[in-house]
Length: 335
Image (cartoon, rainbow, N blue to C red; front, side, top):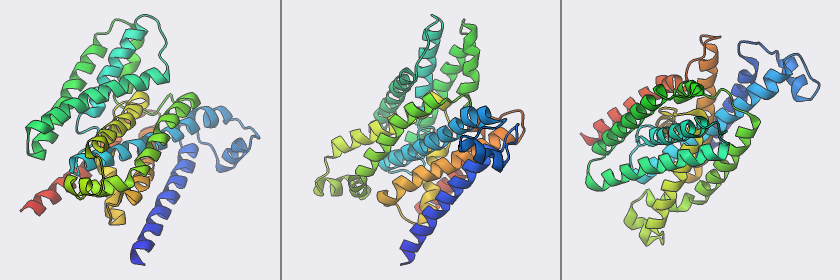
């Protein structure tokens, strides 16, 4: 009964937090929109700030929720794959690899005056994510200690970020300067078309991850146990890699690299629900990631308005301490 109550209260808190942050994000900003006007706009009755709410703030809110959920779910899948609570798309360099290939693709197309569509952005990000993942997997086959794997992933991320910054800085096309803002992480400039594309990628990936709940649960108890339970471990591991890469690619394609969400949120969700069961963790991580990123985006937009902070700076401010706590807890457990 206590576990059931915890689950109900936990999901209720996440849903209420999500609803409250959606309303707050629509209301807050450089232009204040009253709750009454928001209701009128949503009911189709118009208003002086109709364009701001419908075309700017609502797409951004949906994007922050979807991409935040995708990051948190990707982190949970990577932590399951590597059996390490501080594995995540940003820390392992997967987001940075996606950023590098996407930047090269954008520069190549824009320098020739060719427009780049959302599907192309996701494909380029996916290729970069898979390349980084391949390096991480190669390193994981050579080293036995997970700490060395994490350090190697961080170094891969720094290398990819350095090359990306170098390429963007010395790009010839004047339009490339807009990439600087994207490369720091931002939900700005999202359109309803972008939201539609990211939803068509992220929501099916969420469904597939949920359908893999039983194999994930078995895999958490070890590869041998999973094999004895009839899980095709090789195919299952490939599915985890593909899912986590697709989710990371979708985030990087539209918002750039966003730090620490994939590590911090799954850990916070485990602390709230006191369980690692995939049937609970998968939807809870997705909701938690949405809440986390909506809160961080609200702070990024309003803390020093009209100046907007990069979303990655805000997520690092809240997420990095969680990672430190996880590492300290693991160190204490190993003593």
